[in-house]
Image (tube, rainbow, N blue to C red; front, side, top):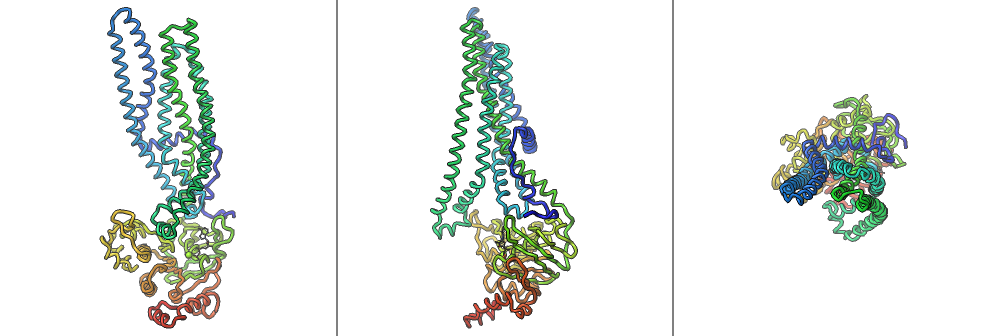
Length: 629
Ligand SMILES: Nc1ncnc2c1ncn2[C@@H]1O[C@H](COP(=O)(O)OP(=O)(O)O)[C@@H](O)[C@H]1O
Ligand SMILES: [Mg+2]
């Protein structure tokens, strides 16, 4: 379904299918990787770069030293003066020591460099996640991209640095040896350089195959990771143990992994062939120059010291040249992966750019949904169809309807979590499509049906309702009191400082009802003109539920409440009741009006009432508690 032009940009508009990634993009990616390095750890980067280049150039210096040493040995066998030989040996020793030491220093510096780059890359991913819409989080594409960015950000920025640095170092090495070799036997240089091109291309193909493998397998890997989460996380452990699911889930995980292994076998076969071919190239690259030197030596065109120097040169050049090939392909491979990361990070600018819009109204006298239609992405049937309703300031408005009728969806639209596909949400005259969604959300307090349990301490669990007031214990306590949570919080080992969640040291678990009261306390703390309570008492006991509904008008005095509930006893006192059915508004009015109408509301109400009245004693007791319609 195509979205109207007025709709704010979402991840669907930003998401573009992956293009073929030519080598052309390498310079840009390299530049942004260097930018990342520069931002994250410039001192370490510069130091490591210098050390790499110096140690790389050491190969050429060694070559010159070996030649001088040989010359000195030849001269000393005639003169019997071993002084110069010892001198050159001393220089060789000192240089070797310095090279080894700088090598180990590089490793340590790179450790910090890598850590800082990872940190920066992660923070950038969080920045994008921080502006992504709820719709984005409900799309596989977003998660595939996030996963790939995540994986690439873990190791690739460090790797691209390392390969860039080692490319610089190997190039310096090659340059040193090439200059020295050029003096000894010039023809070797073009032979070696031209010979390495096919080897380079073959290894690059291997990298591309690896990238394609990872790209293609992301959805499968995500499903497998989900199964491991179910198998290993506390939130699922009770059902997994109670239903004896470990074996079933293990088998499912193994199946998914078998598919990965099969794909990997194909990849490895392909890369083995490419590896065999490039080994052949590498061997030829080594054997051909040695054969040439041997021929020239036998031929008499070359003298022994010159031949020894040439052979040493070839020996030294081989690893450095292989180093160049290896680091160049690593660089290419990293670039392929990092492009995923870069694309993901770039999404932030595009998403934020479209997030413009005017300031949100601080309050309203009427909140109006006007012919609102909403479809979840990829779902044909609308979750809301042509819904028009009014909510007056200061009213308690109830929304009822069967499961799946669209109540929660409507609540999320009111919070600015989704934008309507058709119609408008108006705060008086202000169309919320013209308003910054984040600003609008500041004026809404919502208790979600599937509220979050933060494994933070109690006051933080409440304080996140308005995080600016995290440091205000009095407001937090007041919110807890309103939510009926203060009594049990007081009994916790460390009161408001008690950490929640038994998987952490000193953590304490709450009952689901107690958790729901924490979430309710967040809504109280938020202190917004519009309060949305989506099944706020689903986990509360009868007394708590009764107390909440009884005191709702006092507790939320001066605010507007949209109450979604299946408890008709609580709904009946609402100023206005809207009934949703399959995404459409089918009835509206007060309890009395709707009962007279004798439609769906009356049906549902009577059904619930009958359940209580079937047992006279229970009905009577419940009636006293106010829990009966
Ligand atoms: N994130 C989602 N993606 C796709 N469909 C959804 C999503 N959330 C809800 N739906 C569908 O939208 C319809 C309305 O759901 P919801 O608003 O949660 O109903 P209610 O709160 O009234 O039980 C249901 O058919 C449900 O399957
Ligand atoms: Mg719901």
